[in-house]
Image (tube, rainbow, N blue to C red; front, side, top):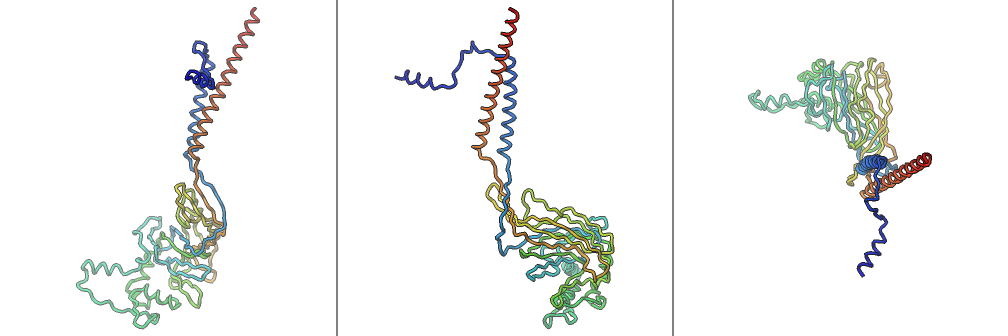
Length: 387
């Protein structure tokens, strides 16, 4: 019974074997075999590369997000404007204004060659009274005396408010909507020698870096000399106190992005350098922000943005023609781009390997058989001629 079953099972063998004594090995067969093995190895590594490679699929949809914040990352170097006069302001179409932004903004003084001359400082601390505090902590003052209450020169919000620094007086004026003029008559500015400091830094540059969080609506942010103030609902720039109109706004955009980084993102303004050869000017960058979602292979999803940009330069001959500075006007696209990583499954990889091995062996066998048959026919024809 067992022998009959084995005989029937043997009959199902689709790979019958021949006796080794009847096998003929030829040079042509060896050549085909070597070429076939090389092809199998090459195609195997190609299939392995496809299996290990992560591809990205693209999809467009309508952006349905609401009430989100827009993160703006910037790193900009001004070649000929000192840190002490540059301010950052933001505004959007909803009416939200942020004047002289200092949160998460850092400045670094640069010399004429673009080399740093001081450590990076947070904007909030640049004009603070740190030198006096450090002097007290170092014991250079014999005793602590109560700080005098400096006058705000009529700009205080509440009776009894104090303005002990030049910046505090300027902020009080700005909140009132007053232009800060006649700086030489302000005692706090005299004590801090603000005008002298501006004179000392007039040939310096400044690197400004930081992050902004703004509402996800169209708006703009800009870097300009002086500090802004609001008067009758209109934002004005307090550059008249500096008694200059020839601000060199030459700059380099080291980095500008919206949202967090993701693989393959290109920031088109990174590395852009603009040299102003006129007395002053206004650089305007018009940015179209595209909401973007990136889904990693492990399931992690990042909501971020990408953008495109156009730019325009306007020469200024005076304050009547515009405000010198660098302006970024951004608008959001209603279309959202989604990128999703994907890769081939192991089953697909295994199927591809089997197809490669089987296909190459089959083609190589057919080729070897054709060559061998041709050689036999050629030999028979040669013998026929000889007879």
